[in-house]
View 1: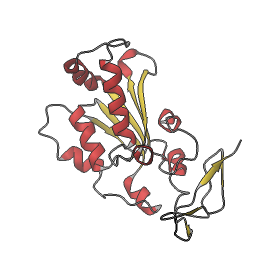
View 2: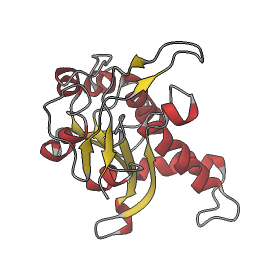
View 3: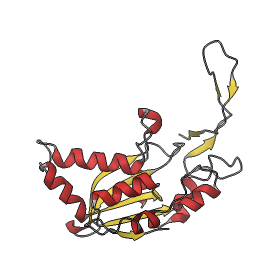
View 4: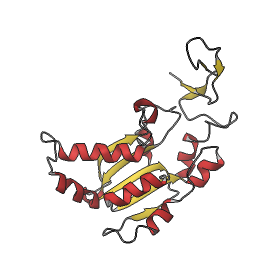
Length: 199
């Protein structure tokens, strides 16, 4: 789970949703195969949640002809059945569905959807468990474990909509930024707070 937090580009991203994919058949603590962090704002693609980025990264790594695995697309699809996806927050219905379609062996998350909503995050309030229950006709089964290290993951999501919440380690609050809706417009206070990284 801590690796999912480390997948974030810095300690202060607004949408701090990170994911990692681990191969536990490699022995020991397992082999980190790929990572992903929410990239909605950076890409303009609203589907690039941390889990989706991690799955896309794994597919690219598996099928890279010059890469370590050099798998065929068919082999890459089968490989997910040996892997565990860790994410620092419970997957939305889109990502939970993708996890099931991929056929991951296991899925582990930290902060729950209910906790995210309590912290002010807009969410589609369908739990991963419900998605998994409704996907029983798929040929694979995915193990499920939630609430892992949520005492650590909650802090990544609690500051964005709560001005008195503690900032993640390595960050401090900045003055409210302003944005212009267009070049000639008056500045408008930014609704979302932002943090700056402490050096």
